[in-house]
Length: 453
Image (cartoon, rainbow, N blue to C red):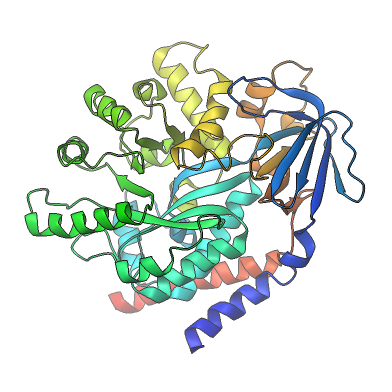
């Protein structure tokens, strides 16, 4: 083990000292909760139990008996599938506060600081970012890791996701956004393992900036074919020259069920129809898309695409890893733009961050709903807080969408393991974690200042 690997290992030892011992129980029994299963029938199950063995949901019903199980009392609480973040960039987590609109635009700042990040910086950024998602009920993330300067950076990223406890696809990208440098396919293939693993690799693909550059296209095509050959999921941004980029995907026959198109804010009906016909997916990130000026994310514009979900797009860019905030922005943008208070239906919004989002990432058979046979990726929301006070009953979907916040998520379970219990993250030395994140961010800014001097 070299010095850099030892540093990363030591970092994780400090901040995950007891996680494995504290959060693993072979059998968990959630009792008397209001279950929003998010199945297609849309039927909730009040005062119901849910039984978990190992990493799966095995039974849902009333008065379930499971001797020896760890019991979680969910009376008066809402039990949902964990949220699915369809698109993020967790490596930017420790750049928080550096995106200052006019004097700190996202792309120049992230490009400048990203190239100075070392593997140990990647490790703490992605680890702390993933924990922030988990803390707010996000149990799955599609992480577009487009700052891999070499194998050590890629290894640091995937290990950070694995250690956090989150379910994820780590879309493996290149060292920058110029598209001139190839993705390290030789290293990526070493990460292709058992499809049952909680963290899986994918391809963070980019189209040539110059869409007429045939030499660049040859490199990009090789990457695409590699992913298809190895049955890896693919994400690709459609932003900047969005119409031309989307048309290039269509013309090159690159749309496919394994492909998630990201940020198609200005997509035309014809382009969205082509994506739908190909069986591809759409990832919308309302907070970041409006933050960087891609346009207003109106859900009605994308109704033609069945497989779609919402994403965070980087905790630092969005401000925080808060899916509730994304839900509210998406809702208010549509109702305001259409001048129609009845739109959208809150239940449909919850579907966008659970069942439909899981399907968009190709994980619909694993997660996204509460039903026997699915992996136990679950959040429990406790409404006993001032910001959720005053609910007298009825459909809880609007109550959750418009009132809940990450701190109301009391319990988080991923793959059958307790990640957050009674409001506390398990096995995490939070003070040490925050210190490591702050020191990494400070070192990064110091490097940048040294280079400028």
